[in-house]
Structure formats: structure tokens, C-alpha cells
Image (cartoon, one colour):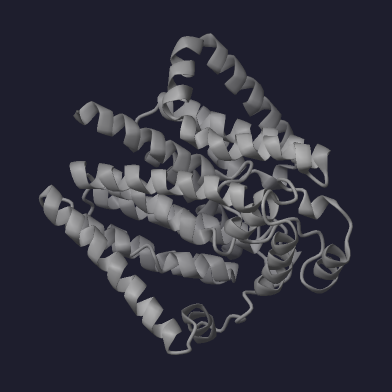
Length: 385
């Protein structure tokens, strides 16, 4: 029940309640009491998975050189609490059950959105693309719910060996992704079929699984490099093919401002979440021409470069490599659909970070899930020794 509440609040399912902040305070308090109640075991788990705490601790440390210290300090604490919540939940739940809970919450959000489209039982929310008829108040919220929900539901259908249902779910959810009009959601939606491929080799030997995991990644990389080397842009080609703006709805403009800030503060950055808290020409221009009230770069990697500089980016890279290594080892050693699904959640989340702030941030459901996946992988690998 507690994990379901975290999923619903972090996944924006409860956004129309207007109580998200109050619910987070409730979750914070419950987590603190939970940790203190079983401090010995909790402390051991925190130490064992210490790597996941490096980004939020660095975010808090950046308060000392931040251009907006109060904003950095409070955002860093929230980032740390989000990570603590993820680790504590993963300590107390089975990875398969966690998938069922997360998939169920996503399914509720998707179902209510489709029901609202059909019946109009809730007033639409108006945003850049017109009336948003789902229960979410922003197109990226709906898009992320469709992609992550679709991924988990497809995986669960495959796990429980329900014939044809994975394909039906994947095709059916395209309507939700299309309705969201989110470029980021569309791009990550195209990654989900990799789950079918990986599931096909799940019963092979460890050596075969290792080869079949590496081969498609290498092939995709080579194709992308060849396309770029010939003067093309795969992202631009995809967006033009699907009728979306090659600027990713203004994202590339925002990224240029972010990279300019990084060039001015390359080593340590301006402080976690501080860039958007200080009035500047860049902020006024972005709010006037791209999106009023925007407070992130729609890119977790640029976000870290701006807020944490080279040192912050190096810490983030270290954590990502560690996450990927554990996920791959779990998949190769066990070959289970559960391991593959958690690995796919990590892959999709990291890819989604190219166009949205979904991981390595405060109160992000994707961040909660990838931290939980790391804890699950570490535990599974230790049990296999």
C-alpha cells in the first residue's frame, strides 16, 4: 500500500488533488519512522547500496557554491529523501510484487485517462497542445505513464505467459502515446519492443544471453554513428517522420542555454536546481518564448552539467555505469523475465532522460524505480553466490 501511494504521487496520478506536497510530507515522515524502527537493518542496506546516495549527497554539497543556496539545499534534501524512500521500499518488497504494484498504478492512470476521453467526467486541462483529456495536467506526465505503464504491463503479461496480450497492450497503448503528443514519450515507446527480443533469449545459456544482449546494442550504435557520419540526424529524422518539431518543442533551444551556463561554470556548476531560481535574461526569454514557468532543462544530463559541473557529471556517470553493470549481470546470470524487465526500466529511463527530467531528480517515479532495480539486482546477485 505504501509503495502504491509513492507510485501514485510520484507518477502524477494524484496531481489533480492539489495535495501532492502534503502527501510527500506524509511519505517523508512515514519513511523516517520506518527507518528508525529497524535502524540496524536499514543502516546496513544504506551502506551496501551507498553508491545510489552519491548524486543526492553531491547535490546537497553544491549548496556551498550555489547561486541560489536555499533552493539547492531544499531540493537536495528532497532528492536524498526520494532515494532513501526507494531503497527502504526495495528492502521490504519482492521485485515481482513491486512490478505488479507499479503496473497496477500505471494501469489505473491510463484507464482513467481513456475513460475521461470517452465520457468527459473530468474537465479538460488546457496546455500547449490544446485540451488534455486525461487525468494528468501535462502531456509529458501522460506520455511517461503510457510508456512506463506499457513496458511494465507488457512484461507482466509475458511473465505470466498470457498469449498475445503483450502485443495487444503495446499496440493499444500507442493511442495514449499519440494522444499525449509528447515527443519524448514517442521516442521511448519505440524502445519497448526490445523487451520482446530479450524475453526470447531468456531461456538460453548465460553465454548466449550475454552475446544477444550486446549484439543489438552494438548494431544500434553502429547504425546511429553511420547515419550521423553521413550528415544526418536520427532524432531529427524520427521527429520529422512522426510530424513533430525537430527542435523537440523548444528543447534544443533550452539545451543551448544550459550548455552556455556549463561553459561559464564548468567544474562545479551553479548548484543543484539553482539555475532556474535566479532571475536572468535566459530565464525570461525561455518563459516568454518556450514555456512559462519552466524550471528544468528537459534533459537530466544537461541538468547535471549545469547544476553540478564536470564533477557532478562524473559522479552521475559512475552511478549509471554501476546501475547498468548490475542490471546486465542479473540478466545474464538469471535470465528471468523479472530481471529483464527491471533492466528495461533502467534502459528506458536513461533514454527518456535525453528529453525529460525523469531520473536523478527529486520526486521522480523513474528514479525511484531504477534505484529499486539496483537494490533488487544487488540482492539477487548476492543470493546466487
